Image (spheres, rainbow, N blue to C red):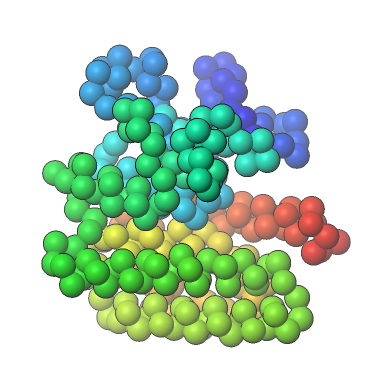
Length: 262
């Protein structure tokens, strides 16, 4: 996948098609070509190496938007990774990577904490209380190590393994719903670190529902209400999350590509 500029507007060329698609509005809004912005170049240079479907990349985009930061967005072709990505993240060779004044920061949760610490004068994301901060980090670790892979199993596995993942996925959501309780956000009255980290999963809910054969509104009403609250109240979220049908279409394409679905 590459980005081309046609008539001075950025376009994406997907690996499986030659048709240029206009860069999504939420990415175009925040994406800045720093070389054309000398004022910003003198202050901060921010480059985000990312891929549009990435749950982890969405976290970073939301955090940057919460802080009101402009940045250059570079879409990676994950089948032909750029040398910049390989040099910036030589251990895992994965997106997202945020490059700040030439210094790469890797792993989405670390990037979000870095953003919150460096630009701490606006929209604090991490709790100030040490215990609350530790608790948020625990749940984010749970999401990254447990929820992500189980969710992927719903549309990549079959048979007994699929059924086991389906049950485990619902159990995970119930635990998260218990942590949310009756609070507006996981951070309490304010949108915070755990909210930023979990809300990108909402973009995949249509795929999870379809291939997991369950209904989120029925199974997790509090979690759905929270997700809708985030989207309605936070422009950083509504601009960063791709539409559910687009993610679902991407999942269908990948299932056909890997022979899971005819």
